[in-house]
Image 1: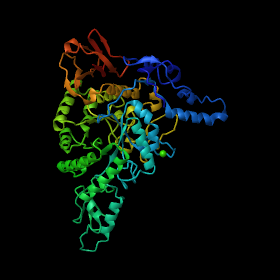
Image 2: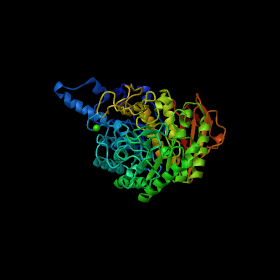
Image 3: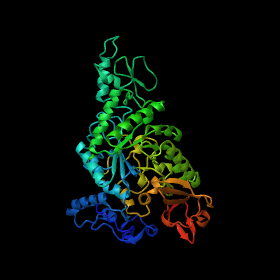
Length: 579
Ligand code: CA
């Protein structure tokens, strides 16, 4: 897809006649960073054309169908932003992809790595410069968190050559690619485990296992003394039981065993040598369930090893806990831990977006958290997010309130660190209940064209999407997707938001509004926001901000942010950036 980096452009003129879902009032939306021009894809079939089937003759139907398919893949956004030179450091905007549900390049119903390559233009255009892939290694399950071979790609996703091609294509675009590394457990079908169980089954009565005969017995936690509790399962027809914290199909590895650690050093090196930019470490709090310090030791070992291979490699771990428990893990030296207190319907971002807490409280929470983070680890990179493959989606958190969903995204993008966005979040996809399969539904590319759309996970429910497809949202300047794009654009344009020290701006703010200063080596940027129900007026002079200039704004409805003679009018759930 060709890029058109003209300056900050909102395309409107052609929309009215093209797009059924886009009304004039939406087209009229305009902000300080956008100006009007025309750049709708030349020679491309519009959505309405496709629906109406305006093909000249029946004989051309097949050709027209192909053309429409190409359109669905390559549809360009109605808004373009100027190219922002991104800083090549650990602070990035990550896009989390569940590969099997993302984009199917060969029409077998499975999302695949070539499909991701085909969508890199889109991912880059959104303003993401990092990608996290959930597990891609061979596995018997659709989610692949139970690995049977740590040195290959699951066949439906592609091959190692495809993975290398994806890495190269990412790197050409300045995108870093990290993959899930699951070493709390393997699959019960992993050869290490099956060999260990066979060996135990063949042990003579009264004989103890001999690790020189079968080292893999030492790779897991096997005990002979009967069932140890709910997480212990019988190992085949042997006298032994094994630990499986998640379920019987995921036997826990013995991470205290040096031989196991050696295996994962080799595995990490294999992926790093290909060019992989780092790992997302699954289930770190279960390495030794209930023993945080032992888990820290594991993270510390792995971080040191990975950095010895590539000092710039990035590691982020999943410790699904409260803030104090998460911060215990900082001493491991790991770059990042996911900010679970920020996430989901009970997290700080959604609470603020929904108006359950005031913006000032949100900013103060963020400032306290940042101070504690930096005290524990001076180069800590926070990893805030709203949803992931294990949580319900943002649409559920906000009960499909589009304004709140947008505002939540805006608040996330004003946080320090490296934010993570789960695929489909940017178009407000549904998760439907708490069933895991429904959290990993096919990316909703198009309402009318199946090109690239994957099959849903086998046990997923039939879920009707509430918000428009990707294709339609790309063409709608007021869509959730375009809000995410603009928020990411703002974040990329003002690097101090991710990297700076933060403090509250003291002043006479109306109830519901507050301001936060991001200061990065003297580059200062002020974020003012309000979640009051009505538009509020901020007197910049009374807040000591009269020397700052309004640079950008994010709004969730038709009413724009307006600045007149030092009085800033902030509509409900708007964000204004001053510099
Ligand atoms: Ca496929």
